[in-house]
Amino acid sequence: QVQLMESGGGSVQAGGSLRLSCAASGYSYSSYSMGWFRQAPGKEREGVAATHSDGHTKYSDSVKGRFTISRDNAKNTLYLQMNSLKPEDTAMYYCAADKTRGPGYLVRYPGGFEYWGQGTQVTVSS
Image 1 (cartoon, rainbow, N blue to C red):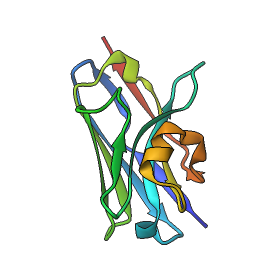
Image 2 (image 1 turned 30 degrees about the vertical axis):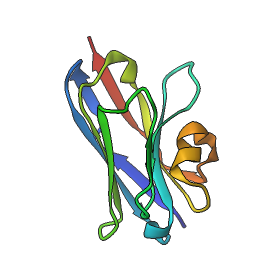
Image 3 (image 1 turned 60 degrees about the horizontal axis):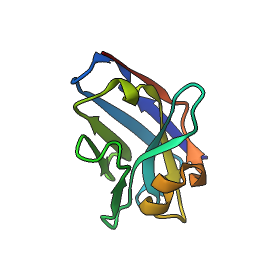
C-alpha cells in the first residue's frame, strides 16, 4: 500500500524559505515519478515540480528558479526546497507519486498522479 506523508509546512513572510519533506513507503520508490502539486482554496490543482530517478525534472514556470525538488532514493524521501516565497505560493502542498507518467506530463496535468498524501499547509504573508 502506497503511503506518502508530508511535513515541513508552516507560515513565513514573503522572501522567506521552507523545506518540505515527503516520506514514502509501500512501493518501489525509485521506479516512480515523484512530485509536488498545490491547491489553494477556490483554485484548481497546480503542478509545482516533479522528478524521476532517470534525472528528468520539471518545474512549473511560477516556481522555476525559486524551488528545488530533490529525492533521496536510499531514504525513500522527496524534498522541496522553497526559496523567495511569495504570498501567491500560499496553498496546501501535496506529495504525489506515479508509476507510468513522466515529470513533464505530471507538472502540466497534476491530476495524473496516481497517489498523493494528506498535504501540508504553506502560508506566506506579505
